[in-house]
Amino acid sequence: MVMPYTAIQFTILHKLKSLASGSSKSEDHSSLSPYLSYVSGALAGCAATVGSYPFDLLRTILASQGEPKVYPNMRSACLDIVQTRGFKGFYAGLLPTLVEIIPYAGLQFGTYDTFKRWAMAWNHRYSNTTTGGNLSSFQLFFCGLAAGTCAKLVCHPLDVVKKRFQIEGLQRHPRYGARVEHHAYRNMFDAMNRILRLEGWAGLYKGILPSTVKAAPAGAVTFVAYEWTSDWLESLSN
Image: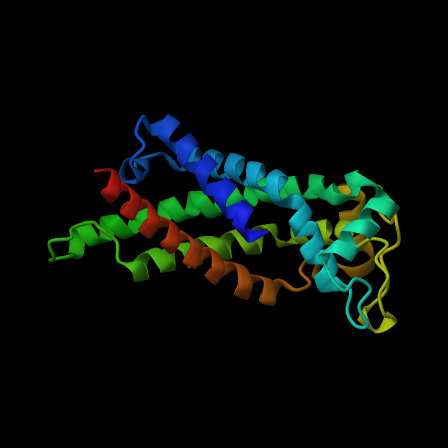
């Protein structure tokens, strides 16, 4: 899931930023306004979500089934989805996922670029080295970590709703919790309303700690790797 998602996301992001800035160089993209960074990130996140969503669905189903396993591998899960839901079943929960990814990816990339500008300004003001406003790997990692944390804290409730749609009808052992029946929720808003009514606000933030611990550093490492790779590829082209 991560490989196609990340490849599509950063490809689209780079193209959009190049169009907005009039330059394909990453260093010129840092001058874009936060608004353009937000919009570019949101559109790139939407494209990546649509392109990789079936893998996201399979990941959630395989992780949620518990023991004893209902699906021993991806193939058996795919066959069951086709038989019980049809091919459209591979996109169950896509709408709440897109509703989630627009603010999530927008916030992640928008705040990342904002933190980068702040760090570069701090380097220009206080650094006595010849690197000037260039950012260290630690600073890039911290910017990515902060951006990922902010985005996850704001958008986690939508992630909870998405996963409820993904696992509806899944057979699993009772000790792993009540089964989410087929068509348990009419739509995304009905799901949020029922979770709030039955589980309270805490229900929309179930799993927030492990989710943040996973997403924030993973996003930070991704940003650092992307910055390194972009600089390396640009040096080759020059």
